[in-house]
Length: 120
Image 1: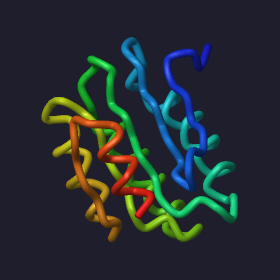
Image 2: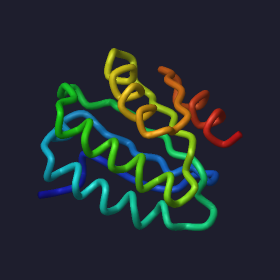
Image 3: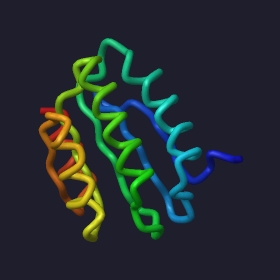
Image 4: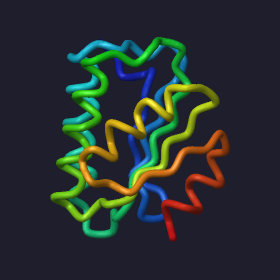
């Protein structure tokens, strides 16, 4: 399975997850995302996370479970802030699941605003 529908990278000490249109919303795909997330989260300079949700697929229980796992791993590496970018209800649904893990979150429909919040 190709990972062309998502990218994970570090920008300004923020681990960015960019989920593009066409991203599958199955547990196996998000397991691959979480494996890459853990590798990047271990970098000393990373202290926040931003998810950009541009996929049209609805978020399901598998996705929420993997998001909570990522939040748990992130806190182990000192990532305590998570910005969620989406123009719909997805960001609010994900925010609730991430906050359950004790992570400070914010939602926005503006990537620049969310990245600025995560950096500071």
